[in-house]
Picture 1 (cartoon, chains in turn purple, green):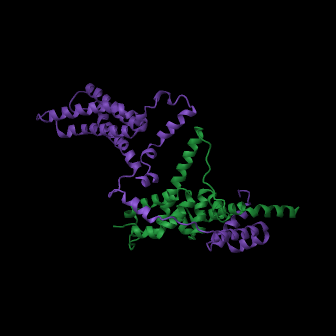
Picture 2 (picture 1 turned 30 degrees about the horizontal axis):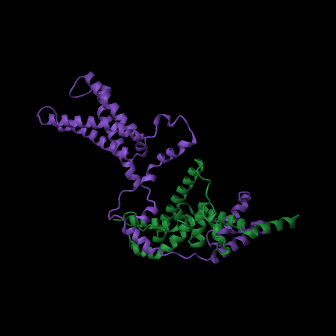
Picture 3 (picture 1 turned 180 degrees about the vertical axis):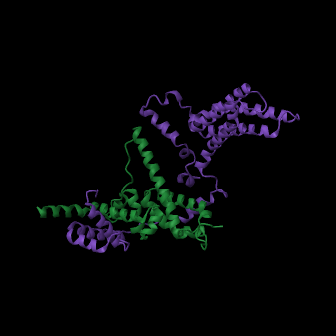
Length: 247
Length: 179
């Protein structure tokens, strides 16, 4: 609107505006005075700005509605311990998934890369490492694409169940294994729980949006579901004031 | 316990904050959000105040702190409304709706002009001119340098001057006078 102002006029008006408000002008007063003497445009602007200020002061304040009871009622509806913010709640399972995946990669990488496993030879270690690394990478993929979490949860759930069961059986027999060696299997259980939670929080998993065609045909009709899934936390956890009021 | 805040500060009482500031917050929300949502935005602001009262460390005055929360609530609201409007426009379900319904009475015309300012400028103008806050406090609320507030207030004034009905007539008179 006023981008056509000369740079010195812009600086002068900024300073004049601050002077009207009794604030630091940011430029020297001699320069400002000199500019005003030679610039009728800025003199007019100064007069108009004071008129705007006068009108702002005179403009009536709109009547304030009763707020106190409304705010107090809304606060009383709050749980005594405030829940985690919706965004954190929505993102937490994916964070857990990433952490579990990274730890599993850490534990299985030596078997895959170096063929190193305390209980077996080099080739079985490579094979074991391959499976574990593949599954851990699929966890990372699910963290990036939550709609895949539901399917992956079945596989990881079976892996976790079998690993934990066999670990418990073997721990019951002295000499077969140790608690320290078996503890990392609990990460699969953790990953399974994180996958289940992620799949529940992912709206696109429930609505079965066709995955394969989604990126091939950029028609206007798919803007809605895509945009909706881009902001899942807004749809679910956004603490809309309307919901507070109608609760 | 409060390692970084003002060690001498007393945590304000929530009811007292509501009593002293709710009308101001409502007015702020009316300008920074929109007229229809001002009550909802005020309520949302005080819910956030209530939830984060324990974390208030006295770095800023209670009013500055509450106003900065209100500003963020309004910014979120405006952003959400813009996104919703953009979405509606893109799927062509509906033509873009007007921002707010304007009150046509001449007394409130200035408020309409203020509400038409660009959001950052509007925040600076409303805080310093309507609430009369010092630039430094407005800067704290808007999370920007004082120089930015100075600039935004001046730009707001320029915008308002140009939008004043008599400005067009004056400018025309000046043009014909110089010719």
